[in-house]
Structure formats: structure tokens, C-alpha cells
Image 1 (tube, helix red, strand yellow):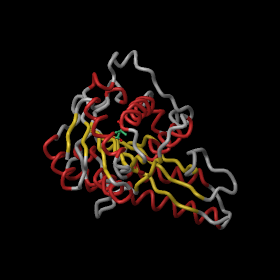
Image 2 (cartoon, protein in one colour):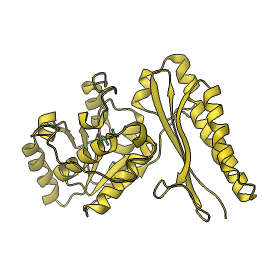
Image 3 (cartoon, rainbow, N blue to C red):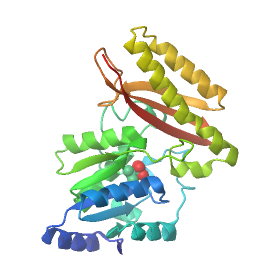
Length: 288
Ligand code: PAF
């Protein structure tokens, strides 16, 4: 595995792949890699000849009170895991390589509406930071495909929309969430949880399953009281020791509120457990 920090070095290796006609799958990350990231790498390896991973903790996507300073940095463990998973190239740019004129002066990519709802409401500017850095990384790496975890479903849709709107020539692939046996979605933020919070956190997935089931039953038997289902869910979150941010049922395609006839839905949740903000979601379908 080649490890590069400079854009020029990156380009010379990438042009070698291109000259040999090899397809490239790209997995952008912020490091501190876990099984969720490695599932993205494995999906890329199944679909592309070469896998390229970036590790860059993007300051633009962190709010003032967020955990940028404490963001875990585990370079040796990350490199070892990527090597074991057959990654060809690891790109580790510095902040100056990504934002050469500084963050303030950087041209931004704004994906309207999708960036402003759900997590965008409590994390203003976050998704603009994500879209901006991913756009720059896509332009540097020029991959054929890029892989994103569906745990961050809103982020995944935002990147897909950006790629369509900016006529970028690559495919964005969503990869299923990796879960612990308890159902808890694997996330770097799980590291912040205490042992008892780790047990409590598994309630999130159980809640999503229940909410989807209740919604399906209500709508298939036309007894629809969807607001009530959300209220019950919020109460259940509170009873489980969470401070809910949102619990919402949306359309899978654009995260808008469902309308009559929509069948492919997703229930999304964000909630604080102690000092940690957790998110999760579950895609489901209903019969109409
Ligand atoms: O999901 C992440 O780790 C980050 O948001 C990403 C896509 C690497 C952009 O910094």
C-alpha cells in the first residue's frame, strides 16, 4: 500500500492506474477506522480494481462546540487495517493541501434543502463542510466509484445529489450499516460511550424496528395516526435515558415527508446519550 500526502504524488500514482485501465473505488474517511469503514473498503474491492482511501479530519464540517480537537487519531492501527484489506493507496492530505487559501476563503458546495433538514438543523454548516471536502477529494482522486455508509444516510443522499447536480462522472454507492450483535450501529462516536451507555445505546435500533413496524401496520390497515407513532417513539427514547434530537419517517429518495402512495420509507433518529450524539436509521417499505 502506498501512502501519500502530496497531491502531485497522488496524481502520478493515479495516472499509472488509469494508464493500465484499472478502475478505482474511493472511500473517503476521517480515520479511526472501524468495521463500518472496512465494509466500505471491502465493497470497493469487490467492485473496482484498485481501492483508494483518504484520511482527513475535515475541520470545515465541525461546529464550534463539536469534537474536532478530541477526534481520535489512530494512524498505525488505520494503516494496518487498510493494508490487511488490500487497499492500494492511502491519501493523507494536510489541512493546507485541502484548503490552500484557508477555510474561510474556500469555495463551498451547498446542497440546498437536503442539507438543512434533520441533522442539518442541529448542525448548521455541517453538510456544506462535508460536500465541500468530498467535492475536492473527488476532483483530486477522480474515482470511478465512491462508497459511503448508509448509517449517515443524509450524508449519502447529499453526496449523490451533489454528484448529479455538478455532473460529476462517478457512481456513488451506499453500503449497509454494520452493527454489533446488540443491533447498535458501529460508529467512531461509540468510543465515547461508557460500558452501561453501550448497552443502553442498542435501544436505538430496537426503537427503529418498532416504529417501522407500527407505521407499516397503521398504514396498511388505514388506521394511520402517524404523529402518534412518533410521539410514542420519542417517549420511548426518553424512557430509555436518551435526549432526543429528532425521530422522523421520511421518503428514502429525498428525505421529504411521505405523501400518499410513497412506499419506500426510512425512519431516522438522532439522540444524545450522556455526552454523545448518536444517529441511526432503518429503511422499510409499505404496501399501498
Ligand atoms: O463520513 C465521514 O467520515 C466524513 O463526513 C467524510 C465523508 C469523510 C467527509 O469528511
